[in-house]
Image (cartoon, rainbow, N blue to C red; front, side, top):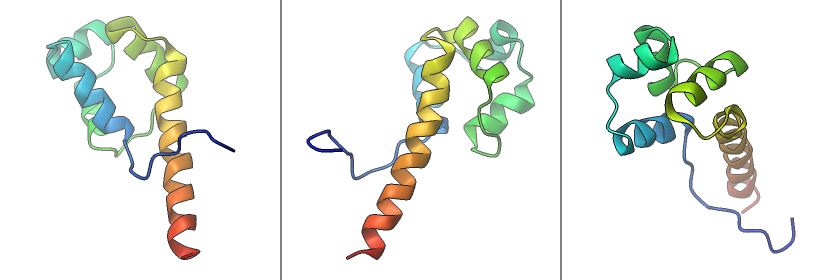
Amino acid sequence: MGDQYQPDYLVSFADMLAYEMEGQNITLKQLSKDSGLTMAHIKGLLSAECIIDKNSAKALNAALGHGAEYWLNIETHYQQTKTRLAQDSTSR
C-alpha cells in the first residue's frame, strides 16, 4: 500500500451510522420512516448485530445521503482494517 494512510484504530459501521444520525439530528423513528427500514433492523445495524447490505445501503442513502456505496464502503473498510490490525498484532 506504500505511503497510503492506514489508521491504527477501528471505526465500525454502527459508529458511523450513529454519528450521521446525531449530526443530522435524526431519531431512530424518523430514520425508519425516511428509509423504509424497520426500527428493529436499524437497531441491529446500530448494535452491529446486522451487517449492511445493498438494500439497506440504498435505504440509508435515501434517508441520510452520501450514496449507497459510501455506506457499503464503511463496512468494507472496517473489516479490512480489523483484519490488518489483527495481522499486525500477531506479527509483533
